Picture 1 (cartoon, rainbow, N blue to C red):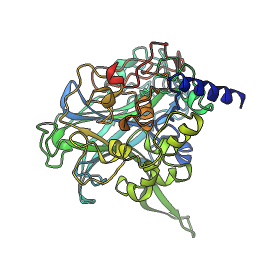
Picture 2 (cartoon, helix red, strand yellow):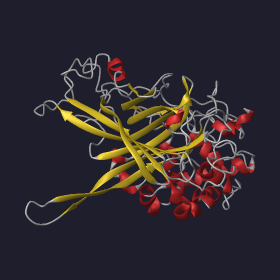
Picture 3 (cartoon, rainbow, N blue to C red):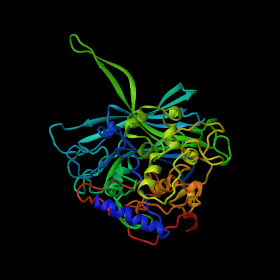
Picture 4 (cartoon, rainbow, N blue to C red):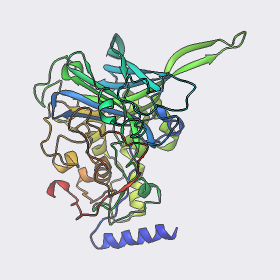
Length: 477
């Protein structure tokens, strides 16, 4: 309590001096709901959607699952769950219903069940007999119209999953082995599935230790990236624009009617009923959605604890009915004003947040003129990649970044804090969590995410170097 009181007193002094105190947000979708916290293989941690510089006429989606993978977490290393259905969803009409879905189903094979090892030393390929645990998958493309299934086609089978990076003795040269998991898809698409570095960066310790800011207002570095050194399991999907647009045509310009699509990931599990009688028959019923993720803010800091599991079980089309009031009057805004008087964070009628994240910004990320609020990550496929990206995205003057899709380097924590603080209403506050970038550089080519950390020599956490404060309006920096 004394430390919190000191923080509040220091914040009040900062406000008096014309400086603003920061309230950090929670970290994307890592353990964001009670049930998925108990079911990590179904927990979709982050989703990114962007136009890659080397694939300007394609949609690239990075969808991640399984939070906080310690690289040394053996002998049962992490993997996708064979019993789950993993989805990448696309809404191209703006109604919050999927029009195109890509379903990923995995199958695990253990070559030698009498061994405790994930792999023997010296693995040099995905088919190497020394690789004891292998996983493959198939992809099914599903198309819908008005919420009704109109087609389902398997577009790939028996594709290999990149193995976990156990260490240099097991994989003397890991990267070439994992690269063989990059596979082409018909129509000039690409896909990758496997373990990668967790691309999300955030100071979780600051967030959950009573808002214990490490350096100033969080806009001058000094934060600790609590996801540094951890891995996740990723599905990276790249498909040409006609595969996801409403009229099945390329996007001619940012103003084209087919330019904007909404993207989100989700996970289904099979519902089983066990009946009595001889043999205890099991009868499979319809699948149940247990997790979903669009924007990296909504379920984490807007949906209340008692509704998070329900949110994960619902569809974006029903967001206004079930969750609209939480966005218009976000609890975080009220908390910021209680803890740090003087910030003047708008608490009610937050239509600015609704537009930025849920209905879309007219002329940039709105899918249709009368589109309802839906938690999908909206991306304008006609916006060309930015030559020099700004980590603050649109509020930093870079319309090629969040909330126009989400690139790997977009600092969605700092962006979200400033938007909740009232940036779009003119209340521009220099907020941040003190972590500005990922712990390792991203790759310039597909699959773009960084390779996974090896179990043998992994090191967790990273401290962001301190630097001059970024201004309240990052476009002026």
